[in-house]
Image 1: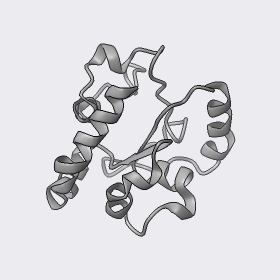
Image 2: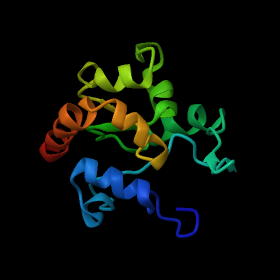
Image 3: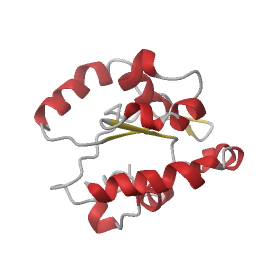
Length: 144
């Protein structure tokens, strides 16, 4: 992303598009999909991992984006930071618990783990994600 300016233009994006069963053309169709990160500036990395988003970004910009996009039919909450911001007290104790409770957040939100290679272990420890959650996610995306 940082080199090309295209969000999700990396292996994590390939995983996310596979989860959604969308090809690149559909995923980047701006008439159907808005890609808005929870933090709008790149915070940098430490030891190869992205730093958390700046705390002031989401409260300042997320309400403005949502107001400018009045016909939002589903928001994917990719990762713990997006879930913390949008779900607040409705978020469960762990990311796994929040993702497992995806039905509780519909029709507005669908929580997902981050599709990074760093979460391959999480996905291996939580086989229900691919078995139960991904088919439901794909059905929901198809209906939109």
